[in-house]
Length: 215
Image 1: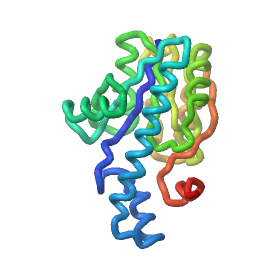
Image 2 (image 1 turned 90 degrees about the horizontal axis):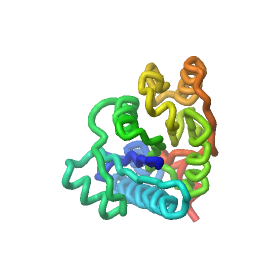
Image 3 (image 1 turned 60 degrees about the vertical axis):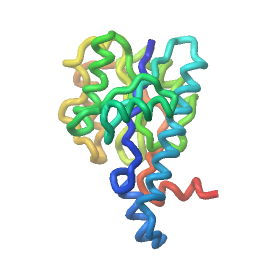
Image 4 (image 1 turned 180 degrees about the horizontal axis):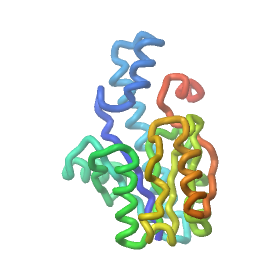
């Protein structure tokens, strides 16, 4: 069994896609840019959930989808998960990205299950990407999906490594900077972990990222 954890922020105006909202306002002069950015975030989350659900019913290996939520309390998060078709729901909790990632991976550690963690900013996400990641996770300690900004859109911890949190290459990573992928791979090499990459995908953070999807 492999857990696929979807890290998702509740799409609320003013609290999600702020960079995209600013771009929509400054470049297009849209007064309701925050609401438009929220609708885009809602669509992206629905798309991600649909891809994960589809994969769960199409692979021989058992897939356990999980929605990890920020911006909502437990009851509202559970309702949102039900609406998205993702029945297992957890809260992300507080802290920087590395802390929240580690918190989600610890669930896999406690149940001895390999984990893939993805976000919801990926209009290009498709079942083949995740299928490839699951397959490579069977042969490697670490699987990463590179992003064009120097980060990564997918993080996978394999069966052997999930049992050893002290070796996870997540400490000292400059989260949010252009060297996240490079620094994570360097940390993996220092720990003598086997690693693999899947296809590069671009997060949708700015208006320029959205243009290819405009008709």
